[in-house]
Image (tube, rainbow, N blue to C red; front, side):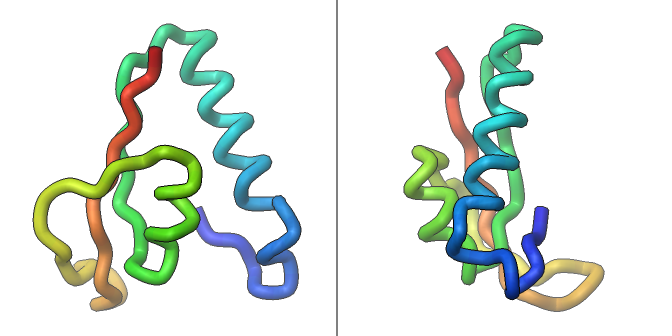
Length: 73
């Protein structure tokens, strides 16, 4: 997911993730995994995602990413 810079820091990204996580709960999804750009790690950590594995370069853009997961209850 990416949010255009002019819409960042006003809750749009958080709203998108929270809405998706609500749907995951409805479908009894137990775990969500994603690849976050290094610049988005803090954002996802605030939403309780936990980094795992090694930092890697995106095959598409070369930008550094980190896998993250969230266990749903």
